[in-house]
Length: 151
Image 1 (cartoon, rainbow, N blue to C red):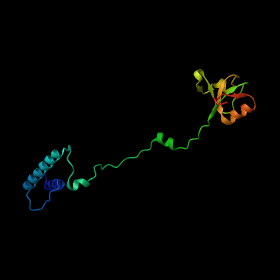
Image 2: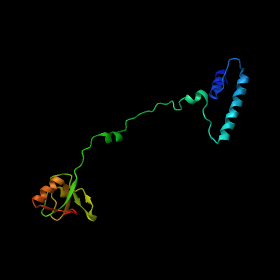
Image 3: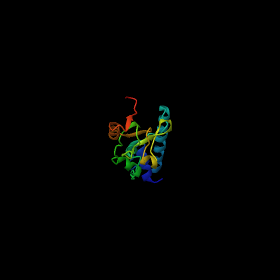
Image 4: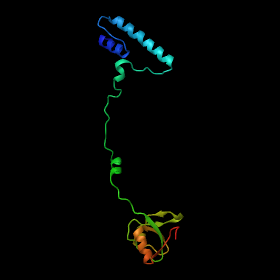
């Protein structure tokens, strides 16, 4: 171990180093201080050695964080058009919905997107969900009736 490394280790342990100490005396002082520190740490119930002296101020992580673009996260930041709320109606007459966002009630009462045939014309008696403005229009024209729990 070189003199510079010994002096650095001594400063870490909190020892004062003068130029008059020989390498052997310095090694002996470091070993004594090291055993004292370990004994003190064991007596206090600590598991790890606490940095002493100048070592307390040395940053642990010298690596700079690397920031990468994430396409998935960038999509979140984009302004997304809020989808219109859909209102349930029961068709009294055949109807071709204007909005492409409408849905049809399938088995089990779950709404699903329409197939190509249903996009062209939805037969009377079907339960569909339309955007609110379109639902109001078809109810006024007596093409459909409301199909919500509050009538």
